[in-house]
Image (cartoon, rainbow over all chains, first blue to last red; front, side, top):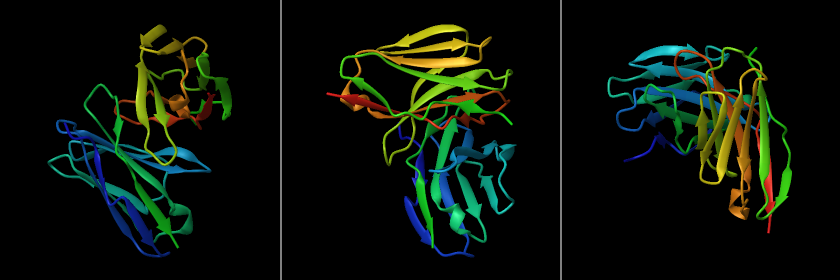
Length: 111
Length: 111
């Protein structure tokens, strides 16, 4: 069974640009959560989507947004990039029962 | 503000010893508790989940939960150099999947 797939694995952007990250969950998993990991702040929850609806949201500015498609694939968008957005972005999928399995992550560098 | 606290370490143990990792959480309504292992440059990998008070054993790993004391621990028996990693404690109290992570404890197992 394939795991959680995140694309791309690495991204380099400049300040002010926007970026879209993609996540394909494990087959049969309808919940997709996104996290940001930085050395200073650790792992922080961004948002969760379930059945195409945002179910939970973390404490991040509105520049961070996401969506989920009918096949449970999810995308995350960051607009007007700032240097501080440089991080590892992790996607996790889950059935109900809330064990989350993480993808390999997308490492974003903002220059 | 929900918080999960871990000693950042490093915790250094000799090969074959028992490693004891601890975690406290602030939100009394938390229902689900997880330990993830993260190797440098990799994504978190689930080690254990625990939902009720007491001990749960899986191979060399034992998770312990005490909801009255708001305390979760992970014991690793017969520690191996390959266990050297950062161990993340995560807590979920909401409907849905929204994990709050501790800062992680870096474990070093010396041959």
